[in-house]
Amino acid sequence: MEFVDIATLRSDLSTTAALLHALKRAMRTSGHRMTRLEGRTLVELKGRATRLCALRAHLRGRIHLRGSTLEEQADFVDEERQVYTRRRAA
Image 1 (cartoon, rainbow, N blue to C red):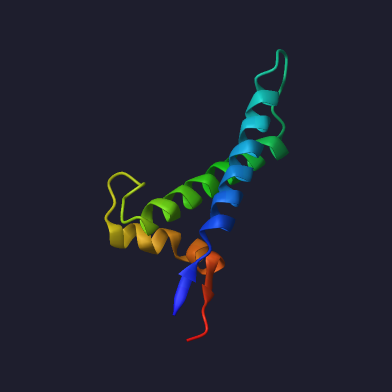
Image 2 (cartoon, rainbow, N blue to C red):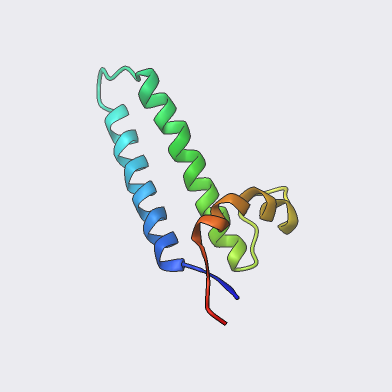
């Protein structure tokens, strides 16, 4: 039997959101020019946040990604689901 570690998922989502917020705040400062590293990090953090939010919604039977079905969303979050899934002893 498999179960998803919701506590770790929530913690990772919170951490990702905090990192994204801090990066955006730094980028909004006056005279700041975004570097390639910051741009790449921003894209990666946004993608990770989207996948984690989609996984969380999928676990509740909801759709996070507009225009997709639950099956399409399941394919989208499959890698993340495997990270947070652990097997219980039967």
